[in-house]
Every structure is written in structure tokens, then in C-alpha cells.
Image (cartoon, rainbow, N blue to C red; front, side):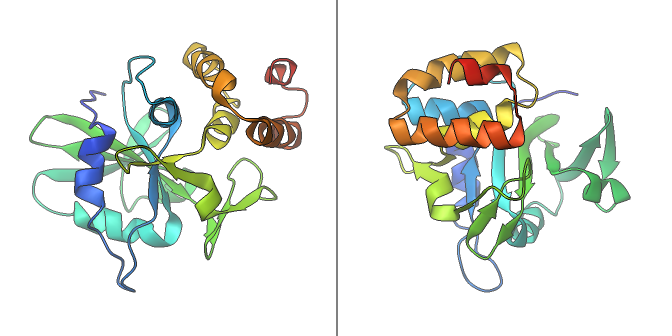
Length: 198
């Protein structure tokens, strides 16, 4: 499945002006490896794709913004791609955006649960934070998930690139961020190997 992912700046150019029917800006943030790089202020490795988080109530606005010629949303599950309206939509938090112009996927939207402005962790619903504490902005104003939250998500699979991101981010985390990450890991992934180094 080919990817020619947008950069965070390219995504922001398309998302920052979006408003929900209620009139508020779409709540979104760069996620995964790109979020670590925005936190650190430098690119630490190559990125194959671009993942963003969008709060569930705001997802329809994002989907509608690319509901037209040249775009297609697909739902990836179990190695297959499904149409947007397929039952698979309810089985995953991911939605991929295909651009006919480049003949590749350009964006991966994570649909995250929330209760009003309180973000709910999909790894463990008991882990909740105000959205304002889950998102930070870089010097250019790009929103990104705070690193401790990104690393909690990365711990599930703990691939080689996830360990690279962990080792890059850890020295820059402050005491509160490390404590939150350790407590969240203990709750969501008890006994996880990363607990030895966090």
C-alpha cells in the first residue's frame, strides 16, 4: 500500500481552517513518531506515514472535507482495506486518506474517544486527561500529542522504531512527564519491558 505522506505542515494547511457545524475548530494533533520530532524540534528519523489524532465528535468534519473528487477514505483492518461505510469502521480507530493526485495515501486519522474536552485513552479508558494537557504546539504552532502519551501508545507494539523514539524522547522528558508515563504503562501494560528504562 503506497504512501506519500504529508508533512505536519501540509496537514495543518488543510486542517487548521476546518470548523465543526457547532462552529468550533476541529480538535486534532500530530501523533506517533512525527509528534516526538515536533516535541524535540528536530527530525530524528524517516517517517513512512503521517498519523494525526482527531476527537471523535470532530471526525465527521474532517471526513467531509475530503469527500469529493480526488480523495478516498479507506479503513485498514487485519491487512485489508475497507470502504469508509463498512462495518470495519467500528472495529478500528484508523482511517486512511488516499489522494488520486499522487496515487498514494497521504494521511492516517486516529479517531480518539472523549467526553467533552476530556480525552479518553483507547489503551485504557480509565486514563483520561483534559484535551489541553494532551496537546502541545511547536514553535510554528503545529499541534502534537505530548510525548508521554505518544510513548504510551508506542509501548503496545514496541517495534524497533518505537524504541528509537523512546530513547530519543526520554532525555527531554521532565519529571512529571516521566512519572505520568511510568504510571500509565503500569496501568495499561503491567510488567512492560520499558518500565526498566522509563
